[in-house]
Image (cartoon, rainbow over all chains, first blue to last red):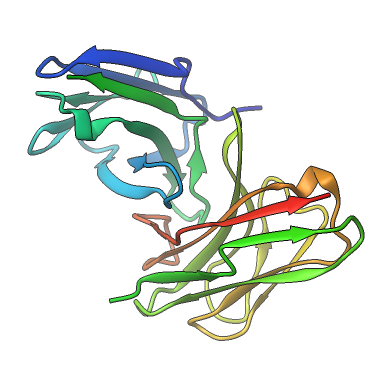
Length: 112
Length: 114
């Protein structure tokens, strides 16, 4: 049973526009959520996170929104740049669990 | 500033052979992890170690063993490799041992079992 779901395998946007990547989770014990970016032939790198006590966290062009009632989070990238083209993974963890659970990823392509 | 270092970067094994993937981190992190990434499957946790001397199974532990040699090193062993273990393997570390916060990943090991 997949606890973290990224239902869009791919997303294509134009440079300068907004990219919105979505993630749903099923485990109500999750209280910490992260987004990772991965380029080909490299390891994933941490992008941004949010605790369940917040509903929004912003870092430059990246904003993560959390809707606990819907068990849904989204990553907004504004404005999108060609260098943002990568696979984005959503991940979640529960307090007291050392495990970080990942979704399957969404491949973002930003076209110049 | 090395971060998380994995060796080797590439490996081809024959079915039934054994090998150990090495991982070391220099960030004094408590928790370490081994993930595998397969097309369309995302990152799946194989084993993790919340602290030196402890290890626990993740989602897909069958066919693997691990060893947390010390705080810095966490190795993954394939005793008898199978084609289903063809994958990219990532080691990661995280500072906290109570909750999995930001994990830092190595560059990965691309393993092919023929």
